[in-house]
Image (cartoon, rainbow, N blue to C red; front, side, top):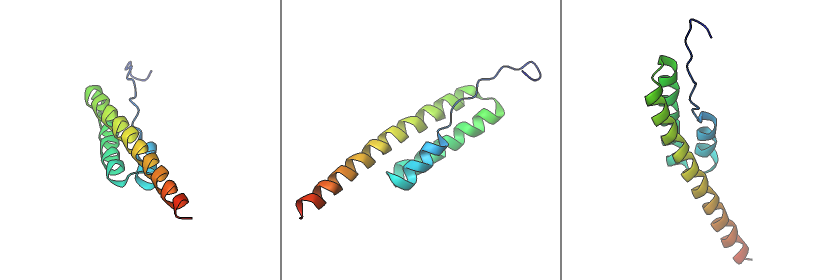
Length: 84
């Protein structure tokens, strides 16, 4: 503890957001990156309530983006398999 402050660092999910943008669902990934950056900035200035809110939104967008990406991959594979 430096300076007597005890701040919890809220997760930003930035890596997961970048992965989702590149591999799963571009629109949801971009929105998740924006929320991750908001959480990171709020962490930096010590606004934990805003950091928690932005972090929760980023996590939700990442989960939805990942599920959408997996569903689209399954549909793509099924369509390719039926064209044989």
